[in-house]
Image: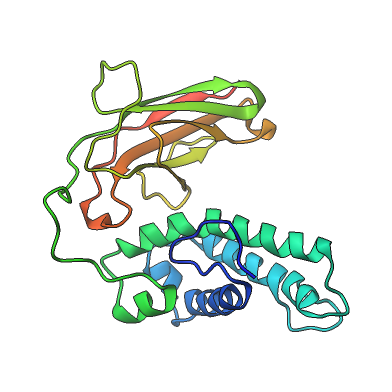
Length: 240
């Protein structure tokens, strides 16, 4: 059965997704004192979250099966289990795809990493339009209702409309909710969000009201992360 959700490097059929999820989570936590996930730039919280997806998906325990185990059995398969597996796949795609982009640009990545994670090798032969991004992101964040923020990203400081440079395929936001502010965009306390739009809404939830959001941004090339642009200066906004 195929799903209609995206995912790029992540398989979109149930059996292949099952195999991928199990292999990837096992690989991220393997590796000794410094596990593979940490070596490739993931935070402990991100690795734990990936493990959480697998625990929901497959347990190997008949007394408390995961949703994929329930859906795989003719006895327990229902419309509800189908909806549940599709929703988990969709949630995992949204969570893990930005992490794959980040790991693909890690200087520590190896051929074994690429094989397990299904990350293609960098293409050393670039066409003329595949050049390094030098533009900074000039962006502002405006608090709107429901704990959400309107983000507008520009290539020039004085522009009023969002705009993306032609070399970039998306903008990446590295952010932290609450004080103190992160020291850098790579601070372990930050989370990442990637948008193909220069203007978009960050939905942080009503619980974020009354807190500060601290964020950095950069233009990226999703297919060639080695060409990603520089991080912006820190922007902070109070969420009303």
